[in-house]
Length: 161
Length: 135
Image 1 (cartoon, rainbow over the protein chains, first blue to last red):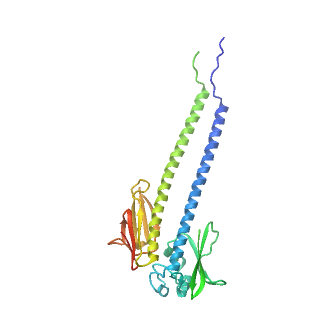
Image 2: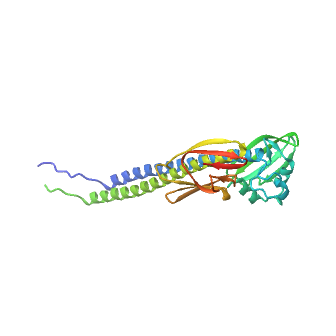
Image 3: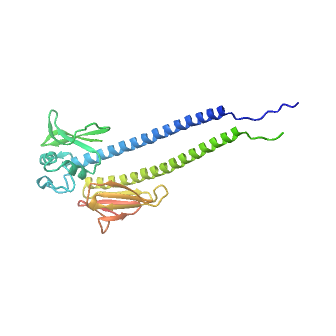
């Protein structure tokens, strides 16, 4: 009598095949998600770095669109001096929240990130403006050498979120 | 001998088809998302390039001249670049999507207007006595 056998797919085979498939699928989804987040994180960091450089350049290399914006407290474009030489009166106006409030400064600087600025000499803070980071997930700082009242100082500008 | 298809086979085929349908929908969704993200990043790149160029022209001062190259297509798609100088804004529009970025200056002009559509390919950015000209 010839041997008759029927090809069979048992439930247990299908179960294991599905298990392997979904494990690989989950692994792929996880890796995909990880790399997408990584790309966004790198892109955001590059964006912050670019803004940090441009805004710090604006503050230390541009005097503002009005020569004496520190008097009327109504600049259309911010700037604290020219070619790294900062004007003390503009620094004071920048740090004075009744002259320029924080949201106005953010708007003028075109930044969606929070910021903190300080000008300091080797021992003391000369002026500070903006908000210090609170529970920041990311912060970048740039330190620029400047002159304030003929003295060497540092303009530290920080962006955070 | 009679060919037989067992109930298990139907069961297995049903599961495989269900998985296939699920995988297909996930991949199509991801593909659309990736395509949008690619466009978004490209728009951001173009916007940043133009804003950096205008900001640099402002900071460099009177007499500054620069020619920038702007791609004709955004990932093979048509797009427009609008500069709203009075709002200090650059807007990139493609397929009903928008990306905006900020500029420092509110004094950017083409030959006649402060709010205008910027052309593609080679564009000249100049600073003439604090007035930025993009042509």
